[in-house]
Amino acid sequence: MKTLAIWSICLFTFVNIPTNQGRDDMSRKRSVRAAIAVSSAGLLAASATMFAMTSANAETDEAAAPDTAAQQVEGAIYVAPNGADGAAGTEEDPTTLATALTGVEPGGTIYMRDGQYDYSETVYIEPGNDGSEGALKTLSAYPGETPVLNFSAQTEDSANRGIAMGGDWWHFYGLIVEHAGDNGILLGGNDNIIERVVTRLNRDTGLQLSRYTADAPEETWPKNNLVLSSESHDNVDSSPSESHDNVDSDGEDADGFAAKLTSGEGNVFRNTVAHNNIDDGWDLYTKDDTGPIGTVTIENSLAYENGTLSDGSQAGNGDRNGYKLGGEDIAVDHTITDSYAVNNGKHGITYNSNPGSMTVDGNVSIGNAERNFNFDAGSSTFTNNTSCDSGDDDRIIGNADDSNQFYEGSNGSRCADYAGEMAWSFTEDGTLEVTF
Image (cartoon, rainbow, N blue to C red; front, side):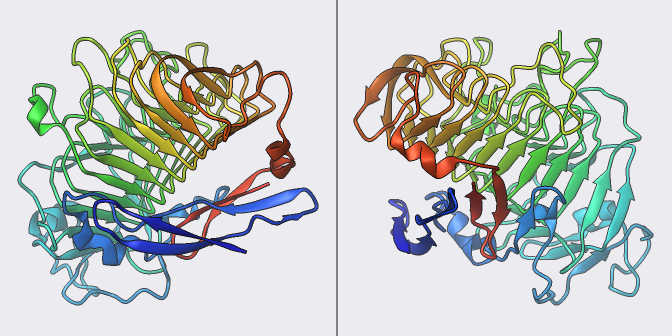
């Protein structure tokens, strides 16, 4: 048993997380690294709540299940599928989500009770509906329950998001958001935490960080958000006639997670899982019209089987990458560390025409259809990466030392640790654990 001491240069916080690097019957258990500190932008104030999570299973969407032993918050507003606008918002007399969102104060909590909430219109949290540093507004599953926000009544259209978040300093916890006509969640505010949330079966990217309105200036693009111990899967766009990010869309827009086109600095994905989305697992796309986005950090995450839905169906235009890190030759210095890309339909981790100086460290890429690592330009730094059973030889342009084992027609010695079926779960503290 080896213990890793992980530290944050921003907050000088040390965390010890055990890993098991022993092998048993050709299997290897690896607890990927996690750090409590996020950034100097102020999310430290919420660190006490960031890791109150339970284990999850990839097949049952238990990423959204909160800790059944969690203590209820006094003075919370209660919401239920049968709640009424004029209700008191107590546990005995629950109200509606729309009423609760306008009534909660900074530092306050909204509890959503178990069950399905059916919506035909977007749930808006407008700019100015903010918490504050040290007093986030919280929208949470009631302890031990799983609320499902279902938007299947929406048609497929770029205006039909599930939740459109324009506020700052919010904490979402333990929700499932599904079947929206576009993004399950559009995150356009700052300093928010999205924790133990599942976005699934939406008709564009499950959770996307981009500007809240089409005319929002660059200084208002969403920044310093943390997506934590969350899952996004089986999101699929299907209608070329509908307006998405790509007007010719036919399976070329719906990713698991995205921070693209108009996202600001300091956004982090940690202990997150994107699988079986019709396009990419992660999309950090940029284009000439809007220029570079802010740097994004992806830590301790997993992308698998993107480009193919769970039912086996595919779309002709889907890009099918695990992690797509750019677009249109615009340099942005992203970071991806300690993450997995497994059995995606094109590349595992690809620069996608991003000629920047990215940090690519400690990643494992296995069995992707074309290349496990695909970097044709730039000055990125590669350390401690492992590539196994790639469809073709990896392409690496940048600074790569001998700590890497890239695929060049055969597997390196470390690939023996990644044989057999893959499984994943969240540990009690929310750390993503991937096993083979």
